[in-house]
Length: 402
Image 1: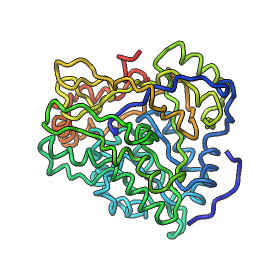
Image 2: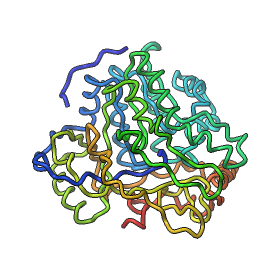
Image 3: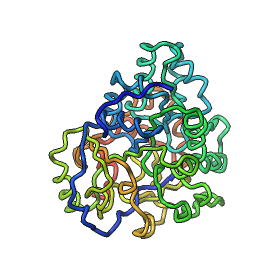
Image 4: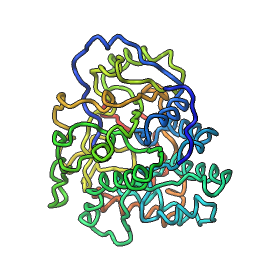
């Protein structure tokens, strides 16, 4: 295990929860705010795992990741990086790539594109850059000091997938698989790791209080979140309590007035910033995190669109209205449970990382991606929509909430 330097101390297919309602005296206490890179690195002084709960594809987050990975302190502190957009079937391949071997790009992109939680996986350039940057960092390090990249998504083989029921076992094992990677490959080994994953996977609620997803309209299979397992962070904390420092990214709030009030209080923060949650007004926020809680279910018919900006109020079938999570005011918010709040920009200023262009330039790749989308969501992809790329603004992924 590497030496930690001293410096400034600093679902699953679901969206975020509605915030806690009470406003105790700490609602007026300003949080301690530090540079985000300094704060994330300093968290390793007291925790073995530092987990960033993101909303996928935000370009400003990609800039933060690059600054963090390229900081000369990072390889002196961190042993591994665990990524959501990484199919564990290709762990040997990514190990070879990270150790400097030449890997053909058509093989390499399977690592992040063959994920099961989104079709395709890490399509945005920012996720491709995570792999290339970590390889570049490793090339500057002695063999025994290199950072290992661990792949958190289950090892699905898409060439053998023809129906939704072929996919569901992998969907249902996403939380436990990712947790097992963190537990067995990091914590059991006495290592330190950065985790990059969607924020809902870091929920710290009591697993017995977590809801089940509604029945899928396109399959006889009930998609449940088993209370005995829960989401990734719940599983990890059962095995290793207090081992993880959780930082959730600010993406704004649904209510415009509340969003404006909160972002006014953050105006003096220099981006990228990390603010400590506990004992501050962040812990008492009572508005709804943007985007609002939404169920995403495989096999959605008609409007289902995992690639082009999900979750976007996906209906359960072609005729049903959008379905949101039932009232959950009793559940703590993932922000109020977090250790830190990451600020990389205001809600309406956040932008999207562009797609890696092979998705629309390589027609064999596009056709296979479209096939998977039809298996998962009931409809093929439209090439013209994919070629238009991501919306420029993050909020434009969720027009129903604006």
